[in-house]
Length: 133
Image 1 (tube, one colour):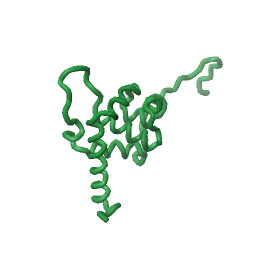
Image 2: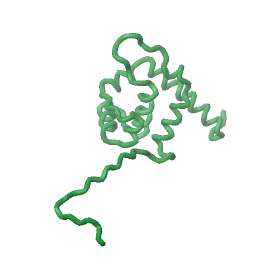
Image 3: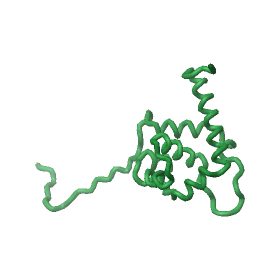
Image 4: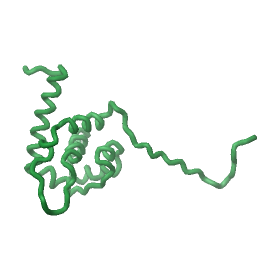
């Protein structure tokens, strides 16, 4: 007995498992941002208007883009369309460069980045990777 062999017919194999390794930088960034308390991430949210993207997701994509030395809003938008780890961090949502730039220029994002730096420093001290000196 032979396997099916039909010439001229193509086979379409779909891989729907979009995962990244546990030691990948995007996974570490996701874990770190998820460890920041929710009240710090949310801050003051608007009660009217279109719902905004979650600040944790926006912070994740910014930190990953900055780690890849991508600072332009348009290039970050392109990363969201072409880079698998970035897609995973953004939960496969396409975010416009305008929204990215509005978020990172906001006062909330400015405070969030400052506080995340403090949380990251505390995390490194707790793990014994750096000392206070």
